[in-house]
Image (cartoon, rainbow, N blue to C red; front, side, top):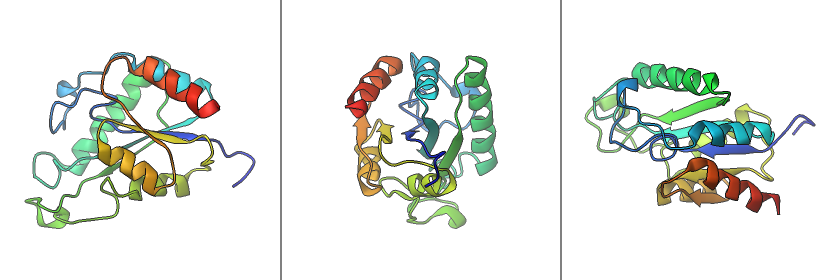
Length: 173
C-alpha cells in the first residue's frame, strides 16, 4: 500500500446509519440513527475512509431496483455532507438465494456474512487494514469483518456517535 493509505470504517446501513425499518428503498422511509452525522464526522476527522457496505435483498425480492438503491445512497451522501459528514463510497449486495428476480436469486460472495463488499472496497481504495474495522447491527456483519481480517463491532442501537467514539478509543490502543 502506498504512503497515502489509511484505515477505514466499514459501516452497515440499515440498523447503523438509519433505523432498520425493513426493505428501505426510498428516502421517504429513512429515519436516521441518533448521532449519525457526528459519528461520521468524527471518523472523517480521525483520518478514516468511511464506507457503507449493505445487503439490499429488496432488489432480489422485486421491492425496488438497483437504481433506487443508488439514488437513495446519493441522497443519503448529500444529506450527511450538508452536516459535514463525508461517506467516501458505498457497496451493496442486491442478491439473495431466495430472491424472486432470477438475475438476483444467487448466493454470491458479496452478501454478508461473506466479505466480498469489504474486500472490494479494500482493493478499490488505499485502505490500511491496521486500525480498520466494521460496525454492523447483525452477527453477519461481524462475521464478514472476521472473514476480511478485520475487527467487527456489534451496534445494538442508541447514539451512534458515542458508540463510534468507544470504537475509536479501542482501536487506538
